[in-house]
Image (cartoon, rainbow, N blue to C red; front, side, top):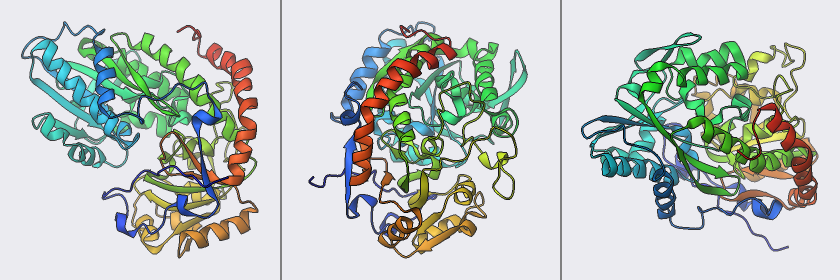
Length: 475
């Protein structure tokens, strides 16, 4: 077999990562590496519209989708907030999501006559990240200086809901109208469990930290679902909401744009689509018996990508994270809360972190997300002193390096990981588009299991997943 690998996502300049010039080697350049396209594994997954075309195809699809949306409530001179989330910019380099935001702005101006159109981009724990994206894609200029990042510690607004007062971000709701602009990738399925997936930002990106933390520290995943729904259904949001514009994503790439005034109807369509497309790949990860994971992507550790899935999905691949009969997945947000100081589960039924993951090599990732738990649970090797210093300086990871060893270079780290893990199977989370960079041995395993997985999802799992969510396959 000739060696072919997919291009990893390029490093970027950010206050949350090492300088790109300090990244000495990428995992795709290791000996014995190859790649596998998602379409090779599962031919039934739709062909992507991007990558494969110029980014202008995103504008074409967005324009067609929004043409069916009623914008008549918006009058000349009205203020409109286009609400976005930093997660969208981590997909395929960020340009597709940036183009959706630009297109939404242009269509609102053209069809309604108003020019008071603002962009508000929410963020998680790296409070300045959205500002970096806004400047990187020159959205501050495109929105005539009316583009801002909003952080969960910004000034709140009280939102009266059917379950009591919750707290949103004042800047998210300081316009007469709002348009919700998001994406459909499953990402942190441990959080939303693919229940009301596209409503998530109302309880996270557009919410104050006290409300976000009802999931992080109080109610867990099920609570996260009804908190977001309660906020969206509140009088304040309903009086302002116009429509949702969703970048449709599958493991193969961007497959289109979905826009609707009815977010619940839209949510059902996307639920069916995402379970079907991502469910196959998530289930395939379950079939990996043992391997080494290499983190090599511009993002915080759990949000690094492989084949459209994130590392956090692999942490939970030993169970079915879409199965709502399971009370917990191995990796829940701030998962260390479910484990004691000795790394043992505090509660009955808490499954272990995926035992097939024999070692983790952190070659390139960002700080700014609690990740000590990962190093506590799985043998971890950090490549280079610059990466080690980055995590030692992170206030959210005061003990990460206490549980990790430092390797001089990536090749030495791999040799050590292979020795302690007793495997040459490697999966790389490097953000490659349309597929996964893997070792040749892991490619053989995944290819041999793909048909079996596809049938299992079609015949057994999809009917169960849809039934659990009370969603019709015809949504």
